[in-house]
Image (cartoon, rainbow, N blue to C red; front, side, top):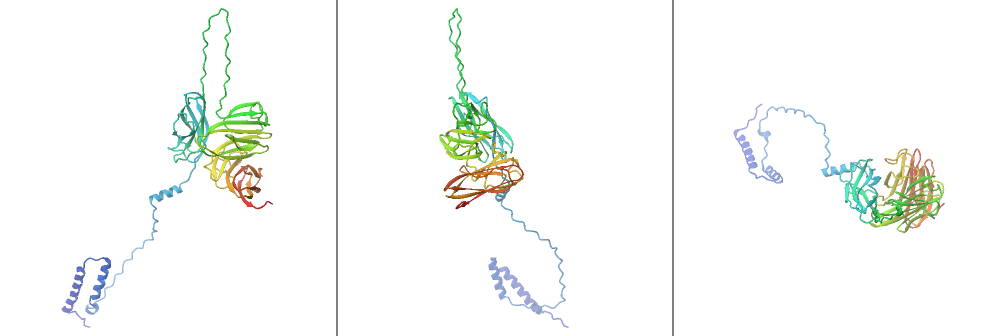
Length: 493
């Protein structure tokens, strides 16, 4: 077989067209990708078709090398994009555990004492406990918030304290020039500006100095004469707290058997006498006090067994002058900053257990149910915890309702003001152990006894407007549970 060969002329023709093609491509100016594509298409259109198979001699086919296998790597998951640093900090803040701040005044005392002379310097010490879960860090202060500043600073640093720790806050003050009783209010303020409630007071009594009269020189007379000694004036007792007048009758009549200074109205006498010379039953007490509190909305509360009534500046806040009740009452009042309050509380006890607790608190912190958690099944003593509860719907089982509370033998008071239509209402409770529900002081449900979980109810007719609802609850042993709800009804069964 004859192998065809290319002539020199044919080879020259092929080389000529290759050179022309290369020269044309080099001569083209730089173009944008779109222009370049168009140029290539135009040049391809004008190039002659060359059949290389016709002009090149056939040759033994060169075996195509088999490419070496490229090792396959396992799929790597695409990492999720990292959020910006700002978003990361916000996410971290949201994920961080929250805490709350609250405190308890354990004790307060004045050095050298509450009775001072005009211009006397003194130290006021408040012993306070951090009952929250947030630590008191740098930036927390003890802030003057109302009443008499007594020459003190606007604020002092609050000693650092972790949850459950107790610290002393010391402030240097000066007694005013004019005699009289003075009271000032201070509160802890956290580094974020949160002002903890309630205010803590400093109360002093500026007294007149005793003047010693030097007797004038008397001419010597041979016969000795007795020198008259002026009678010693009876000191008027100073009342730094409540002036308590105790009577041996239920009507506050006659002369009080006992008058004393009570630091607070919070007593659980049981079946005992409240003081020396007083009988166990059929007695009454009148407490009076003048105080100044920071302005705002306040709620006055009283828990009493038996009768109680409270006045503020002559206005009767509530009048529950009746026997046989063991209930909590409340009334709200709006106060101006620096307003002097003349408060009078009257109480009587007939027979059985005796006890009364009267207090006031600002309202801004409790937009839903204000829960007072007490480590006693009889609603006695100061609350271990005050908090806002969105609903009364708890099933604690055999556990405690909150940190610092016992799992058994505790009680809770919930209070809230709510709008109602003019209609009948049926209130329900699912409870273990005991509870009571009041609307505007009227007892609607009375299930104040031990027992396993059960549903109880009661009805009341209300006029349109705001009404105060109070729920009291106690847990004795084992499981603890309470849920409260209500419905509007057209008639009662």
